Length: 217
Image (cartoon, rainbow, N blue to C red; front, side, top):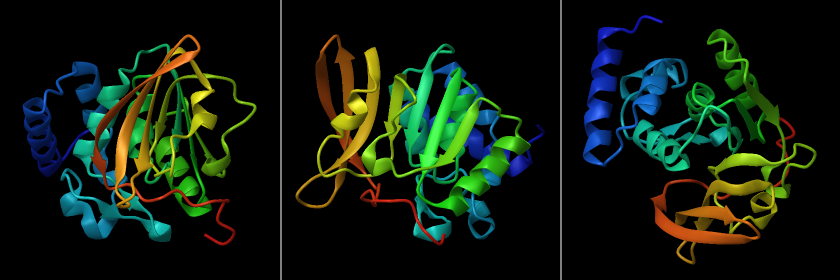
């Protein structure tokens, strides 16, 4: 899909920022380049499409900056054979990028409006291996089997073991856990047999998870 000059410049600037942070996976960068960021950003903020700023979305939700989205995907170390679960669809940009690398991506959000908008974007980009559903991310996702990678973009008060159990052996999960100061710190969990290896990473701007699906939005 052709890119505008501003999109090309924005992507080039992103590549420079990511490489300065040690992110230089060519498959990831290609996937980002092939995913038109402007389709996912509210029109009022189109000028910030390629920025590291957190942007507002419909339903009071927010969209993480493109830098953070790329860094999280890089930490997952996706492979073409992977099944991925994402909790917190938001605009759908992160799921769309992952869908260009992994075999299948299932992404859920509590807001019907966000789910519908994200599905429209997946349809427009012909990303048929990305499935978008409305669901309550606070209670786990039963009946979907196990996943190679799980990405959570809403803060839990404690590490969400309910999702850790859905990881295959060798699987990786990223999840923000809220500290006493209310800041969500990204945690990386690797499943090794019946054990879990945990690594604390960095602070994130993710909001606390909200129970139940939204009834009106």
